[in-house]
Length: 248
Image 1: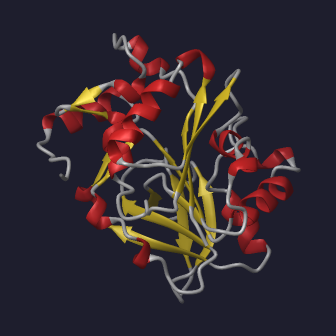
Image 2: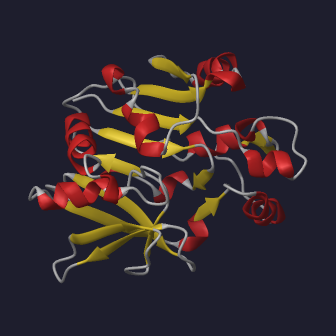
């Protein structure tokens, strides 16, 4: 089954604007490449000839031409742009709004444009056999991540947003065995507004619904030095102080 990759980039990047940046966050350059390019490079081993890429953008950012030109350079053919008229209540909703374009019965991967994971550390063959969900993680301080707690057998038993239930923090990539699983989980989990976190609908808690439905969720624990978070000006400053090389 063909994989669908949904890249959510439907925010305003207000923290970067406040810090004096004058271009949209995804166009900010670091070490000669835009954050968009760094982020998409993370998925090198997931993008095949039959992979569909869907970019969920905010209409006011006028991102379409930029996204298409970048994908053309990368040789990605099956590209779709979804432009939203307004901000949504979270990444899960932004992805959900593009669902009519998904290969429903094929794998679904949801990612962002403000994380660079060195691509050789992020491979499809790391997904555990029989997994219905997969969350690449790394060891990081703080409580501002999504977290996965494992059972003795190494399968997830709990997934939480902004609650440090373990040391396994998500890198921001969320894989589902099928797009249909995402849609079912979204519809059922968020039917109860108590599941919103700070008023937002995050992707990670959807795995709680998968677990409740008896499905299996796995993780991969990545070396922290291979994960570069670019979501805030402070995080970008750390990246700028490093010397990463975008793989050729």
